[in-house]
Length: 109
Image (cartoon, rainbow, N blue to C red; front, side, top):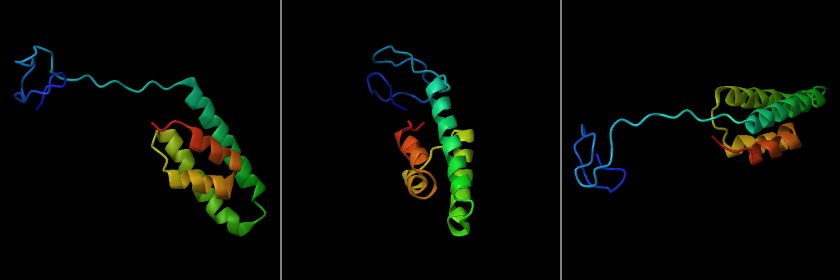
């Protein structure tokens, strides 16, 4: 293990660095703070994804890839999982232009 402050190699059980004296004990995990902007962006994306599915409902072939993309995006947004750039671009092209642009502009977590 190495000290996060000075870079000196230290014992794995060490709590304080012997060289610089800084605390290197257990790090507390900080949960990411969910901002209102992310919630609003998620709602906007979901609304436009649904509108895209409805507008393509009379076309059976495009709807065959529109629904799986929409379900995948919904699951990723619900569980806080990252969405790949390829999925964002497919959403832009095949489902809804506005939802795809919002996904590409949204901050990745």
